[in-house]
Image (cartoon, rainbow, N blue to C red; front, side):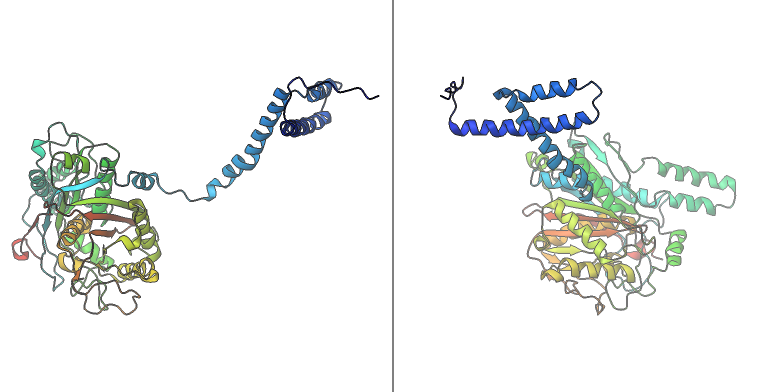
Length: 488
């Protein structure tokens, strides 16, 4: 007669006992593998193996759970964590700035808005010749610093800076060639004694002279050739987003069209001999003009709380570098398209969400062909039409100040509901496979725009802005006629 098996000390349902057996078998298997590996290099006369086998023979529920947990941890390491560590470097990780911008979305406590601005232009009429326009022909000292000071004073008055007690005020005011006027005049002085007054003026421009006394927060200068204006704006937006300041004076000026600078551009072969014709079949370069654009940025939540009007929001931005051509600017349309998509991604938008594109549009062969190809990749290939144009046929190329100037022109166009024509473009180059380039004014159906700006040496920048309806604090304009500004 077979003896009857004693009852289990902790009676369990049949299913639970089966699960316990499975757990025990899995744990036993792993311990057995460990024992076999230990036997290969055992120097203890088998005592280590006997202890391990004795440990394995125990089949209590707590030990079974321990073995099951050990199995799960081992499985997780080899089949989950290890593959992630191996393949993670293969995946492209975008810049933290872009991810940060996407995260805050419509959070008005982090969104930067344009609450005041001022614009200075040497040219406000369509350019019909190749003569550079100046604003600083009779200015003593550095022309860019003088334009910045004038524009900053007007912007601070419009932004009521004096009434904002306790606010952290920062500056990213910039100029691509700050101090070059003083250096040039110093080189022209006939002897060493005459050089000292000019040298003193030049050294003064290297100090934060354009930065107003009210600025006690971060103050930095961004230099990136013709992309200087956008680099300054992007850094200013970051100061707002990252809570480095409550108010940021940002923008750029260009007041350096002396013989030295013009000779350099002429040697590069980028100056027009006729007139600026962006995207035209007969384009032959740009016409440099002086100008400045200063923008006051602050948080949307602060502006709303204090009842201050603002004209636009900065929704997104992107920066890239192209080092394939030091003189030609952007090398191809794919690089521009990637830049634009990165800016749209940071704003949480698609290409179909745009209503206008302000192109860099210098009128040079390389730049315009690359931008036209980018338009094809971004819009035409997707069956999307977004009007695009360049205003450099009207304002000339403001060089380092171009981005700041064109941002204010774009905000004004969005408020007017009318995209400006590409002044000077009469016959679009037939090699361009895009229908987006405007040769006449075009009514807009929305208030969002993408702006592109690049510089010699490779800096590439983009901004996405949204005009705010019902707000009346639009950009202020001031210009001088060419004959009053020392036109060359």
